[in-house]
Image (cartoon, rainbow, N blue to C red; front, side, top):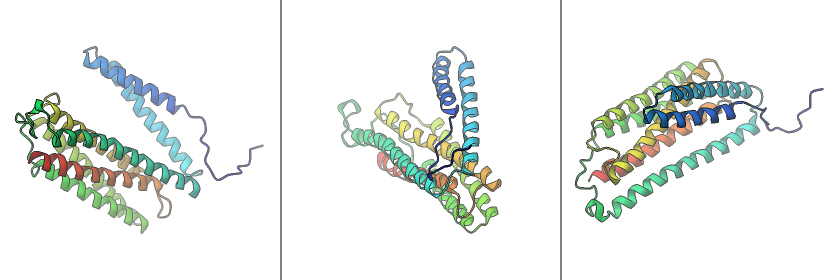
Length: 261
């Protein structure tokens, strides 16, 4: 006889994906070290393939569970979990801002007691960084539009605006890559380049993760997984995307604008 469930919570079944994902992470890390030491990319590529398989398999299982197990109580737990995850991401970026402001507000003798250092040619904040700011602000508008369209059960408009959002995210990454390739300073060029690339580079990685998150939501929306009264997967992606937008505004104001003055 099947056991009768006596609580509203979802206790997940045993899954191979945490182990497979850990193995993929090990192969990516070890393969990356081997590749940087010119030992070939085989382990790195194997780790990347295994990582993609993990993502697809895990997403498949979670989507399957969402159809039967994700009731209102479970979704409430997800909301708390997502909020705490975003809070942890805030603290992650606080570390980079702390390093940047410590170096800029109290410049040491090694950089000539001035900020930015004399040997650094800073980027014009109202050139490519300003363009990227407009792109992310526009993407925040389109994802909000997509959310309201979904609430009104206008799936066609929601799909269109969601597509605009992740395309704007990928354009942002392209502009950032172009900016990096034309910057006059390298990562190992001192405290300014290291704090600049760590903060903006990790933000770019978060934009990439958020854009992939939105792409998955787009496919799920096409398949009818999201309803006006049941779409936490999309809400979580929207929360994450707005977080990415806000972090960029702080980066633009403090590092690009104030830091280049």
